[in-house]
Amino acid sequence: MIEVQNIQKSFGVHEVLKGIDAQFEQGKTNLIIGQSGSGKTVFLKCLVGLHEPDNGAILFNDRDTARMDQKERQLLRQEIGMVFQGSALFDSLTVEENVMFPLNMFTRMSFGEKKDRVDFCLNRVKLEGANKKYPAEISGGMMKRVAIARSIAMNPKYLFCDEPNSGLDPQTAVVIDNLVREITQEYGITTVINTHDMNSVMEIGDHIIFLKNGIKAWEGDRHEIIRSDQPDITEFVFTSELFKSIRKAQGGALGG
Amino acid sequence: MKRAFQKPGRSREYGKALAREIDYLGLDSVSIVGIISLFVGAVVTIQTALNLDDPFIPDYYIAIATRESIILEFSPTMVSLILAGKVGSNIASTLGTMRVSEQIDALEVMGVNSASYLVMPKVLASMLFNPILIMLSMGLGLLGGYIAGNLTGVISTPDYLLGIQLGFKPFYITYAMTKTVVFAFLITSISAYYGYTVKGGAVEVGTSSTRAVVSSSVAVIVANYFLTQILLGT
Image (cartoon, rainbow over all chains, first blue to last red):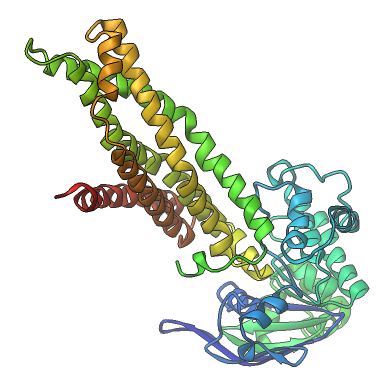
């Protein structure tokens, strides 16, 4: 479980996160949603350690990151997998080498063991046979799947995804959503996903946090979000006719 | 910069990265260095012959002047400036692209010291391989002078061979190699700094690449003056 206590982050005079509390449970897909500029990316970067919060605490299974020394932080990072918005695959390495990279850096496995693990991860994301291809030779959806394979190579306890569906067609987006949810449940991972894809929210939102102007404006799950009357939520989620009709069908307040 | 020179985590992986950088930054530069050195050596010989066209000056002085020009200045300094353009822009644009495409963030999230993993092998590769490139440049520069002398007839083969050996000071090689290693460090570390710290997108990557080449070239020229003053000054 990840517990976030009152984290604040400013860049100069611009206050991006104004004190956010949250809990992300193990085995659930936790979604952070919000408009562009609401602080989602900064929040996620604080969680993975790419930004240092100005105030507050982040606890990974009761381990406070602020109290960790450099070695403890490095060990924690080996428990973290991350899927970046643009996949962030190393373009000079093949698919296989990308997935093997963390194993090379942090394990003492033999080459055969690493190869088996890579094949397992690539099979898990249904990418058999793409081992020798370079990132430039595969599609955006395949790149996302390679990124997921790389993120699970080290058997992470925590998985973070920054807009995993951005730039993907709806069909591939659903495949990625389902994959992330399956992996989360299968391995009991604590997954945090940053998204503004409403299909993802409705499909896999076990726990949803809505950020607005750097504060947590709403919290619930995908069933509750449909029925929510909070103006911020209705304004953000039910802008399209499709979602308005879904809400109507579910018996939500905004009948239209 | 401090993080770039911290103790590496997994030395075997850093060794592989070092070998890869020697290939990218060193071996890939052999042909350009070779071609330029061969032709500059030839031009220096012809120009020196024109300027020493005096019956009281022995012909082998042409070879002496060619040798000193190549060993003292052309190979270590001019070739380093060429490498500042080629290698410097390569390093800055590679690291800049990795930065804007979040590949550096990906390394950090994994727990890899990205500065050390990406920068240190480049710096070490250049410091180790550039002296070899410069030695090659010296040899090919002198060969270019020999070929030009023969083809144009400005100096005979015996005079040329005598000239390039006469009064040779081995310390000049030490001086040239010292400069080369310092220049390699300056070029790679300055270029890596500009690439690693890029913020923005494609335009900023291009700008950082240009700044890297300009700054490292200026650093080489300034360092050249001070090193010459220290090593050769009286």
